[in-house]
Amino acid sequence: MTIDRRSAILGTLAAGVTATARARTAPPAGKPVAPGLSEPTETIDLWPKGAPGMPAIPPVEKVEERSKDPNRTDRSVSGIARPRLVVFRPAIPNGSAVMVTPGGGYARVVIDKEGYEIGRWLAERGWTVFVLFYRLPGEGWKDASNVALADAQRAMRLIRHRARDYGIQPQRVAAMGFSAGGHVCADLATRFDAGVYAPVDAADRLSARPDIAAPIYAVQSMSLPVAHPGSRELLIGKDASAEVERMHSPARNVTKATPPCFLVHAEDDNVVPVDNSLQFRAALKAASVPVETHLFTNGGHGFGLRNAMGKPAAIWPDLFVAWARTQRLG
Image 1 (cartoon, helix red, strand yellow):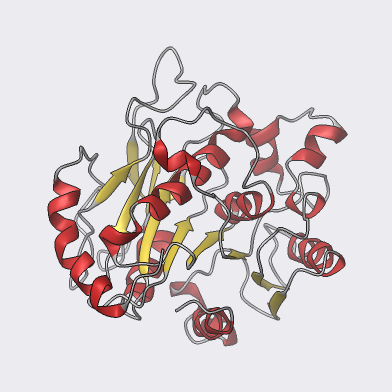
Image 2: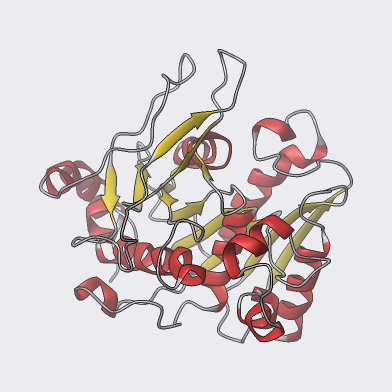
């Protein structure tokens, strides 16, 4: 499917009618956002009949505000029983989309720092952004180690299925993720065709492979000491076998079908060691998959946009946009 610029704009104008015809769960919210920032209102529920593998007692969604600054929100959400995409529409779409998976150590999904902030930033530059609030493996779901991947696969297919509604081209859909959400992103890039859920509708006939992927300071290895212990324990269990570790370590699942990747990490990250990105890069290079890598001396972990300000790492979003253009996105 090819969508020209005129069709893209008309599709965006008409999409409000299409979207309102579908049931939607409200975005995670919490306290009012900082002054001058708008909150997203449009969502896409992933599973029309409810997410598969629901626990006997469904999780209860809870939003926590972690910021002490009244002018800066730092919300996170847990208990996600209705996984969904939250949409940021650009004024004039450039035909490209990105699905963002925020971090949170697989114990929560952060809302602002690695979700809404990058959503607004990319939308201002023409990207249509879909922030994914995915299920968490420690909340009682069946096949817990694959629930986040199932949500990511389903989300990518829905984005492509509704591409005309959003003025995007289905062959120009990126994935970006941060920290544990970076693991979701890299897992999707390497296991996009893994059968982790039963198809539910026509959207599931489409590919879940991102056209490019950007795991940012990502959890990757599930083998200690490189693994982030908290993410590893929640995803695969404290006593997971070497085979289970391998199955859920993206660097060990790279193939020639893995999409081009954009990697960012700080050398002084004391939460998720930089070796996570270095191992993934080495595997991509060995498979002849194009990869762009940016390592910063300082930055620590979880810098996103806000904590990179004033540091060399602040340039990473511009570097991503420039690189994406070389891959014919943006």
